Structure formats: structure tokens, C-alpha cells
Image (cartoon, rainbow over all chains, first blue to last red; front, top):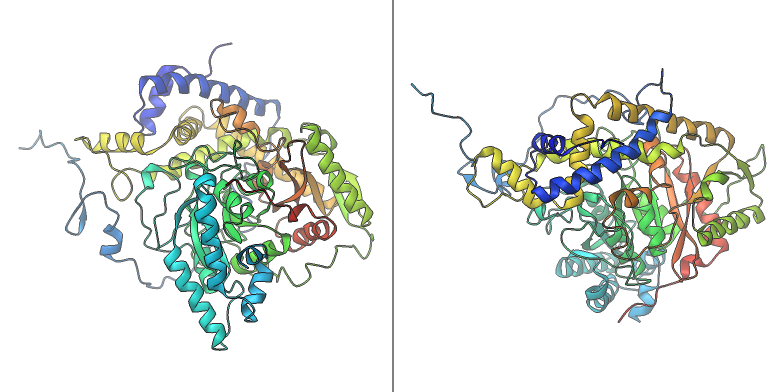
Length: 102
Length: 497
């Protein structure tokens, strides 16, 4: 039986998930995820025609509250766990490519 | 003296403290003596707060001495799972990615414990981000089962269950996404309740599978479980999935706890059993469940055979839905706002990919991968949408069952506690061990695990009882009927020196 998922697909999914995986992890996950996905095929034994998908079990739908101003954490508390900060900002590597600047 | 205090349950301890017959400071000191003695072997805690706990204990003792009113858990030392946000200590989820994360706020359940005058002694170990069934996926430390230190405590709330069983606290909070309270409770011989989805606020619980996660108590007795529910249950405006009073009012779960359930019209407690399901368990487990049901029959209950035709598909549906939700929930760990950031000089994409690679353990990566795949273009309908439909069928099984019976009884786990390392290399095998517990999460119904016997290796066995949504009061009373007739819950592990 063909594998449910091959190494190229695992690499693609890792990219989507923003996970850097070592080659050994790619190999391992290809085998393990294939086995797990094979098991999940079991669901196809069930005819679910006309069955509504159930996202959650609550007897409630929309929840509203008054749009009133409440206190928030504040800058210091919010930034307290920042891996890197610059004054009142989270510091991150450059995101915009400036090679096209006029 | 301290041993005597440690053997009281929460209700007895609270009563003794409130009446001035015992001091919370003494009980708290006794807990820390036990922690100092046994924790090097058991490994239940990621962090402990001795100074803060003793200060709170003294505050409670002083209030009582001054004749002031005190809360429902006055002076009782409790533990909390380390995926509950607290402003004291770190909130790690047993992950390297959050090893140094200090929450700026408390989870609602922690605020409620503190308001009830509980003494929080520490935060307990778990499978990383609650993903696992043995606590072996902790990125920070190992927890062993107090009944046999070569075995796992179960998971993911393994630290909470080991701490309660080992008398390293009087009660604890866990979280249950697919059995993470009930299975460790069963493996460690204590009581664990997964409440109805929406009964307890999830505000401040680090999300794993948001439509499945629920916080609940791990205790030595059913009555302590009822007491803990009195403190933590109820609507919270900070959690829009917590259910309001108009839909399902919270009860005083202790008020009628000791009154057995009987039905005025039909006369008897009706227990649903699914014979073919139980057959999948080890012999000792099957026998213990059968004997437990006999105890109920002697109390006048009758059994009804029910069908759960879709139960067998629960694991497949669960591991699609839970991992899909996890892959989305865990996208927030990006090395930017909090948590681990890679030290390597990297561009912004590499900051994400390397920080996540360095911070997450293998099982977390595996589930993120699985969930991302299930949600990805071309596979969404075949996996995620299909799983949500199967989920609806499973809920239907329960709806039909509860028209015919008051509760359903079955094992918590097909085996007792397994050996450390036994399943760690085979993720699918580990997933399959959750066979009995995950349906309750998919259907959103409450489910409790209570001690009902021991196997040939002297390892505890749990009886699982499930009831209809928001029927916790009835569920606890049914569980209490058994507890009043048996002494399994009084057995204690011989603690390793």
C-alpha cells in the first residue's frame, strides 16, 4: 500500500507550520504520520452523508457583552516577557526587503 | 501529628482548620515536609512556593483566630497544573518554549481558589502542552507513579495525580482534553472529574484543543471533588464558552451528595453498559468494572445494555480535531512576543522556524504537523470536516444512551499504569490507549474516574462514569454511592524513600 504521506509532503507541511525539522525528523515523521493517517482512514467506514459537522457541543451561539472600556494590561506588563524589546516595542528582525528602495 | 493531618481529606481538614482544631500553617508545613522527602523520587512538581504558601496559611489561621469568615477551601494546601496561568512563578506547560514565561494574569480558576482561601503549594508536571498520556512528554522533568516508580503516572495531568496520590497536596487541578484528568487519576488511584464543556471557565488555561479542553479537580475522594467543583464551576465573562446560569445553573454539589440516586417513577438507578467495549480491556480491569457494577446492583441499581455504534471511531476523529486545533493554537509561539527565541542570527522567517524547532518537543511537533496537514488545502474535507461529522454521530450515541439510562459505566483505560518507556517510541500505540476517555470530550459530557480496585501488580484501576451534559450533580452522587460502600479510595501507596 502506498504511503499516505511522502517526505516532500512532510517538508511542505513543516514549512506551512513554520517548523524547522532535521532530516532525521522528516524521515521519522513520514513513517509515523503515514501510520497515523492510515488509522484515520477508519472514519471512511462511516457514511456521513447529511450529517452536520459539529465544531463544539455548547448550547450557545453568539455571545455579546456591552462595549465598555475596561483596564488593559499596560505596556510594561505586556512587554515583560518579550524576548527582545526596544523601548515600548517588541524588537524583531527586519521584515521588509529594502533592495527595491528608490 | 503531621501524618495525621496529611491523611485528612479536604473537607475534614477545612473543618478542623475552621473550627480552630488544626492550623493551616501546620498542614502546609506537613505538605512541604512530604515534598522535601518524596519529591526527588516522584517528581510531581515543576515549581513550589513554600514561602508564599506559608504566608497564605498564616493569613487564613489569623482570620480564623480573629473570628472572620473564611472560604470553602480555607487553609487547604492544593496544587495546580502548570498550564494554568499564574502571576506567581512561571507558567511553563512543561515546555522549553515557555520555561521562563511569567503570566501577567491569573487564570479564573486560580482566582477562585485564592478567593476560597486555598493555599497553593505548587504547579505540577504534565505532558508538554497537555499532549500525551504518560507525562513522559514533559520537556522539563520526569514524574513517576507513586504506586510503582518504574511506571508512568498517566497523563497529561500526571503531576497533579501523583501529587494527590502521594500526599504531596490535598487536591489539585488538572485539565482534560482527551482523558488527561481521568486516566492519570485512574493510574494513581485517585478521583478525577472532567466537567461538562463550558462548566468551568477556561480563561487562563493555555489552549491545546479549544473545543475539547476542560479544567477539573483531582482529589482523594468524591466528596472533595464536589467541594472543588463548588469553588471552580460557573460562568465567567472572560470565557465566552463558559455557560451561564440561565442555561445550566451551578448547584451546590455537596448539598445532596450523600443521598443516593433513585428515580421516583422507575424506582431504580439505571446504569448503561456497553459489553463489547469492556471486552477490549485487560482481564483485571474487566473484572474490577464488573464487580463495581455489582456493588451498584446491590444498592438497587439495574443495568441496561446500550449501543455506542460510533464509539470505535472516536480516536480517529479526536486526533484529527485535537491536532487541527492545536496547530492553530500553537501558532502563537513565534519567538516574538514571549517564550523562547532562537539565539542564532536569523531573518524573520527563521526566527519562527528555529525558535519553534528549539522550543517544542517531539510530540508537540508531531501533533502540529498532523493538524497542519489535516487543515491544509486538499485534505480539509477528507480529514477535518469528516472528523467533525463523526463527532456529531458520537454525540448522538450519548444523547440516545442517556434517554435510556442515568449514566454509562466503563473502564477509564484498557490497562493499568504501564512501564516508563513502554509506548514512547510508538505514538499511535500511545494514542490508542485513550480509547475510553476521548468520547466524553468529543461529546462535551462530564465524566469521572473513581478508584474501583487493583490489578495483580497492586496497581490501581479506575471506574469511569459518564453522565449527560451539565449533570455533574447526579454524576457526583452516583460516584459517591460507590465510595460510601467501598474502601478502595482509602488505600495509599507505600511511598518510596
